[in-house]
Length: 202
Ligand SMILES: [Zn+2]
Image (cartoon, rainbow, N blue to C red; front, side):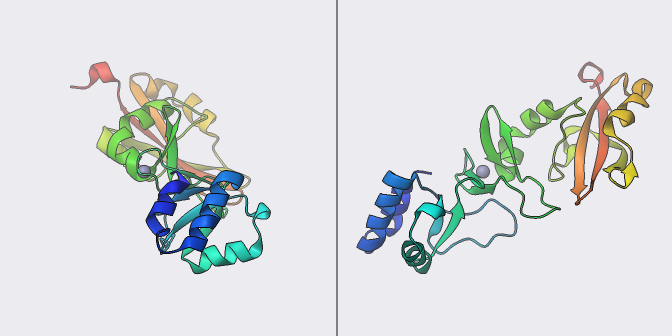
């Protein structure tokens, strides 16, 4: 979201903040979001600012934080193309999973994907060993049933490619898709979902 929105939102009675935001916008390419779409984040009083904070004086950062802004790094976040809320793109733990996806070259948060772009998201990941939907999609809503779940990684398990190769016959008349169930430091849990091919669906 354009930072000018942040200025119009909070700037009327706060001239100093307004000047700081103007400067950040013009010289530091800062951007703004009202809220987080990322799970487990508390929304700020005023807004979220994204910037390269290495280039911003500590006293300026303190002033912004005191005014209720949360400061985030510009290269760890994007904003949802539809709702404008903030989505984290860089993991912050070993178990972190994306709460967003790119559809038609734009970033969308999971809520907007589930609301408007579920089919497109699934289509893009279908029949791929190098792609999978995230666990926040209920694939049964789209006619899939769970075939099996597994894991793969440092501690063993089955590689998804092997999973497909050993089920060629069973998958012949099916559409199939992988879903990520969990991630850990050395392993990933996944499941294989199937549904009848479209021409065979009623
Ligand atoms: Zn959204």
